Length: 188
Image (cartoon, rainbow, N blue to C red; front, side):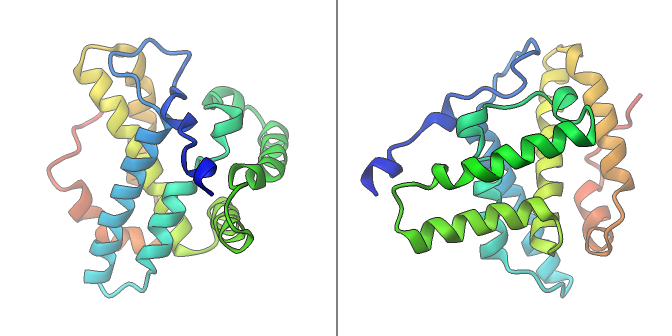
């Protein structure tokens, strides 16, 4: 297990590698912010009496991009080119994800693989919260770049912010105004 715990490749995989960046972000940094945002969302939801397993959601957030240890950060325009491309990538990742957790005791490795799979299926609230936290992390990254004068990220920012505002899961509607209150600039 010690060898597994020394794997730090996600700290060296840069997201948005095809874009000029003022503030390069690693997959590990991104996963931290997704996990933190997930934790915040979980607490807000609990205050609204929405049943959610915070521990499961945060663990799911921590492992949601672990396959990028092998694939790297696949650029969005390619990954989302077609359902066929997305399906092929998912199929390869489903085979590789078990290798990510090699070196852990089987029961623990299987637990993390299960969380990764469940996040990808998007059926449970915990997975949906992670996906929205993932989107908010992307919006924050784009905002940071735009504020730093990097206009390459402006179209992505506008598109993702519009998508966030339109997201319509019932649990999101309960916390949406609180999350977005006074903090979301108009997309011009």
